[in-house]
Image (tube, rainbow, N blue to C red):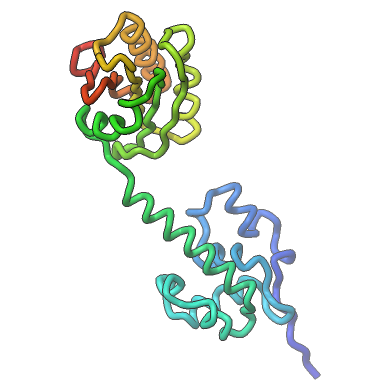
Length: 230
């Protein structure tokens, strides 16, 4: 009389070979489609490991792209996939779809005119001075933006540390800084120029280029790069 060997479960694998541990150590790009799906599923069944279940799901739906089109009900027709697992899969796929769509919608800043168009609505009508930063990736797309300081611009207050800590956090390749003049006149002051030079010097040290500093007035702007201050 023979008995079937029980399926290998996640706990049976060496810790360093488990998908979650590998993702933490090596990053998600190191994992196979099966392993990523196994993480979403979290558990298998009492007869089947989560790895085998993930592999079978991919095989039964036909291709990875089908995960986007298949419904919760269709997933539930696969043996071992209940409502909870089906919803987990669809939620993960939808998050990935939204991230991909967001990447396509990212605004690319390729000139002072592009930056001014992007910032004019945000800053031109403000009654207080706001120091605003755009954080860009290697394609000059805006990946994050933030008001760093509110109030009269002062070189001792707008510290490079506050500007560049977000650039490091978001792995930005470069930044564009801007602030508004509530008077409507975008003519740069001595403080504006001093702040610009400090930020530029700090960026050179960190390897994160400060591409421009825009001063926004009422439907007007000045690029300190175009003016030769950078």
